[in-house]
Length: 458
Image (cartoon, rainbow, N blue to C red; front, side, top):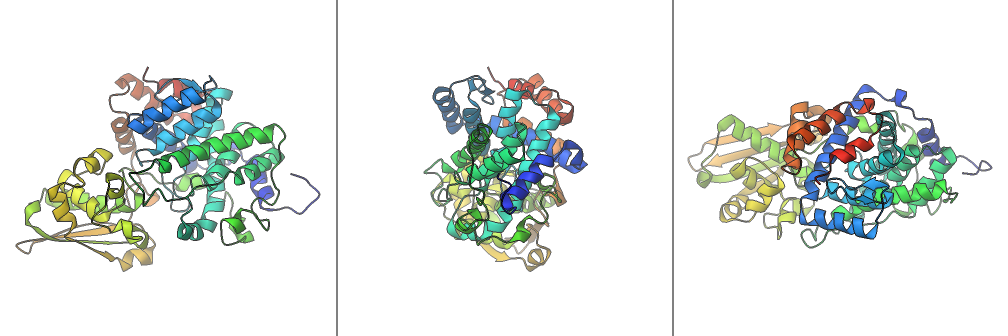
């Protein structure tokens, strides 16, 4: 960006990204990078094995033919933008991608970027980690400032802030300088688009997943434009018609005061279950109840009470006992508890198998939902589930934080178990072992492109 004007928000973020080095990163950030990569490869392998996943891979291979980067699981080549779009879309399909209390779902927009560029440019694991960490920093600098405003208006963060964070991630991975990084961010701002209409229309559209892929694709496209000399508006973020004003409540300089200090990647969480993140603590609490008391006589249940935190019980779709599709059921607390009581788990297969069968319909109509003031006071995303039987017996389960949060993190065996479950029979065991091993020593890899080649089922 030009140097004959006052420093603005784009400059601040670009300068941070340009000076970030691997040696600046804390050990937890590096650990999370390993976990995010393994987790996202797993969700992409799982997503590929769906109707939409196969459709996505076929579209990318035909519409964006090339050899610059590999389509995960599929093995065919594509352009950088095509691979980022397809891998981002596939990684989102199962709804089991990472989650951040500050920024929402981030990995599906950023990991496909570093994988595509990492393969194409033969980046090392340390270069990948650094670019990924910067992208999380950008997400955490912008998204919290606009989240409440955008939620009220139904805007989607994956294709909005996702496009901008992906652009900075791509620019850092490409080795661009501060001015080019700023231009990539600014250009991506004008690509930011998308709404959450896919939530009320869940089951009737594919937008939720496509928007993640578009964020990844936009990032590489914007960085490529900047590398070729194209410029974006200097006031892309804080100008009178910039992002914070057009898509948020206006610019406050304090938004950027702590840029990078807390290392957003270090604070990311993970989804061990399917469906909306805001039903996950209900899954955990119900599983805790079953672990403590064993299998219940479901026909003898007369009342099910769920107390949780504010975002888990609003808006209405999260307390709706009568969702119209399996996809909508993934947002519903009454369906969640009914399915987990029966099957013990909350994977996509569990939801699709019995979300609307007679027993589930009976159980979900017994649910009463309330606000847990203790969780509100602690600002935690936990849940308590209480079940009352016909004879008056009561059983309960409680968690203070959903499994996968920093305060209740998955252990390595759980990460590996999730990855193996998502990969299924797509890859031979030896290949799965190699992927787990490679991700576990990510910072030692001299060419991350090897990871992509290991994912090919062909």
